[in-house]
Image (cartoon, rainbow, N blue to C red; front, side):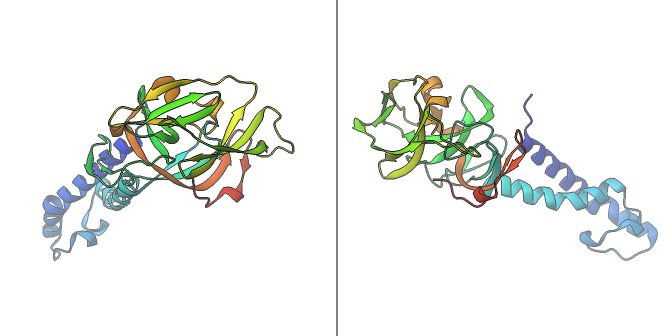
Length: 270
């Protein structure tokens, strides 16, 4: 079973809040009466009146869990990039912040939208639930909106019959390397006025095809075009599986190489 932090936060917040509230309303007044003390506000209850340890912990952890739950569920959620499918935009080990309200405010755990704030735009870097395994989070770039006709052939992208222009940057220099990769070309793609860099591998084939994006769905592609498991392979992303828009890198730490890249801290994601 996948580790579900949102579910644990909800359960923890409800449990600690319930314990604190029940004790404050029922048991604390009785303890105070038995001790002969004047009743005090809930926030001032302390151990000298025989407060159980579980209540003390609940009172301490409830506000912390509640704040974390609100921030993570409705404002910003941190994610770590585990693969190179979004290189060169995002590197392995990047820790990013995802804006949770960009595509609508959703209830935690059940992911039901309660307030419609906005919709994805072409070129957004979006986090979503992998359609084949919704417990897994994916991150890709939105290249197709509902109703779009998307084609990918000869390692070039077409949107609604328009060939998306690219500008050659040169051979790609991987992070930490002192020379360029002779098999990887870096390009700047202009997706209808949204510009970003992509990678093309000379020694790898590309998955090609034409697709019509259904209503309520989106077509996602990785910037590392020949090394990305995306909509070309498994189809479209339903709107209800969207998590949020990636907005900023707040840390980079590559566990495999134990490397810290401070230059990436604070970079906005485009």
